[in-house]
Length: 272
Image 1 (cartoon, rainbow, N blue to C red):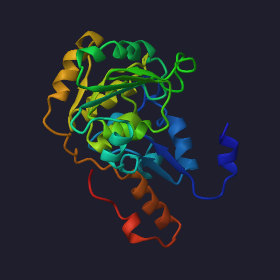
Image 2: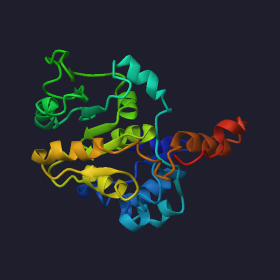
Image 3: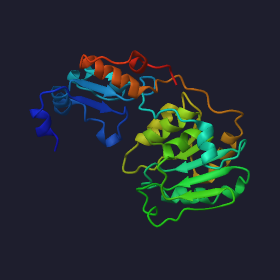
Image 4: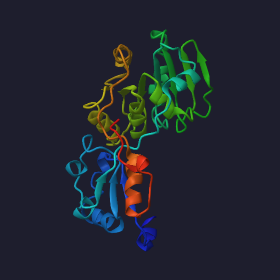
């Protein structure tokens, strides 16, 4: 649908890609399709770090796109005040906090329902389960909670919860992983994609080489995996991966447009 508009557009055009494709889409940057992308876009921006995914090694990328490729780093939310978020959510000073979410919530209902049943196994730990706006059970789900469990249909501050908690349990989407890492939360990932789609699993496999992330094998193993993650003495260490995608992209755009900018804002930031 966008093709006619792109063909008529005379300004600079940028194609931004998160770095990983589901298996059925692996060929979209190759052949005639890739050549068309290369003719329409001035830059091919990868919102990832080459240490996590090397696009030209993973996929067949047409030469017209390869020469326009730039890694800008992960698109990461602005760092939040972790203690302030924890206080706002009534988490105890030394209390461990687990957030279980399915991002938008699509296909994660059964797993999240199971998460609501294990709070009693961790009576000293705060457990929040967020079903998400795309969940089929979200619309009619009341906000509820008793003891150490809180259940939510949707939270507009979910990104901050992911960053401020001690452990995130999710299906492993791009946004959830970078939100958790931005604050040092550990991760347990249980992918929920079907029909050959494997981005979530591949994303988790690559991240766990650089960050304390466990790829769950079965929901029956989840209590043990939670216990192992919560026994860590401190928040996870920074992974040495470029998490400054917003800043780096801004710097690149300003340079392309020959516009002035505040150097403190546009230079590549420290590694997260």
